[in-house]
Amino acid sequence: MAAYAALVSLMRIIDDIETHPSPPISLDNQQVESLTRVVTFLQEFLEGYKSPYDYSDEADPLEIRIMDASHTAEDVIESYIIDTIQLSAAATTDDGVDEQINCMYFYQDLQNVIEKMDLIKKDLIVITREKVDQQRNLGSDHAGLRSSPTEKNHLMIGFDDVLLELLDRLVRGRGSREIIPIVGMGGIGKTTLAKGVFEHKLIKEHFDICVWATISQEYNLRETLRQVLSQARGYLSNESEKDLGEILYKYLSSRRYLVIMDDMWNIEVWDKMKIFFPENNNE
Image (cartoon, rainbow, N blue to C red; front, side, top):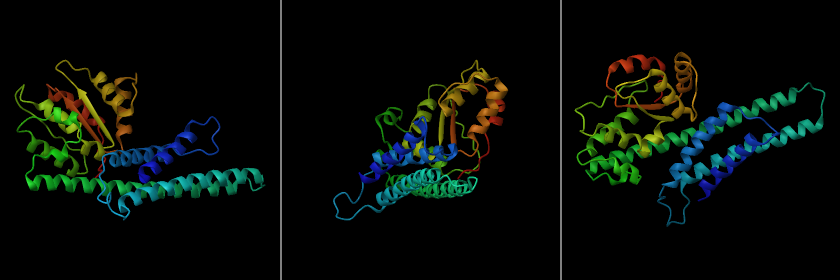
């Protein structure tokens, strides 16, 4: 698939620059993070995508959009590398003015491409939501919603409708922070239902960060914060409880996140932790 190959090529260039001992250019960390996140999303989408144009002579417009955006990003980066090398070789006496102007245009051009790819991502999420609605309207067994054996293992008879309601509420919910409690007697399958939601492909595509935290009856606030932060960032921190909370708040800011707090016995835990979950107002 040409679109997928274009995404792989783009990520290879970024990785080469990021890991090179003496890279010809430097990339903005926030732009690299945004670009990596959207490229990963597009790759995962294409891995499960069945094009309606597979048996047609026509090219798939969706794949063309993804491929064109990837090639544009690659061209922007490669052009900046060439311009930087040429300016360095020229050794002009303009005190680096040309380099600064060149750098400014590069970051703006790359940001434009990132926004273009983000728009494609949003369109794909809409398409996925429409498929969910179609399954609900048809009253099917929702087999199309379950993208992996792992998800199927966590679903129980009679939970399909509840699962769909939760998925719909999460991806169509308010832009601000929202709390969705799953309550009931022990043994009725609350954790099973939550896992079915947490591991669903639609959730992985919609949220930038997904975290599962097990609280238990004897909870430790600092360890809970470490657990949430380590899953969000990918590595453990050993700061104090206050510092962990501040780091978590800053890390979640401007990101769409889902945090499932399983086995919570007391609302006191949430009262203490809610201040570390920002109101991002992300649709």
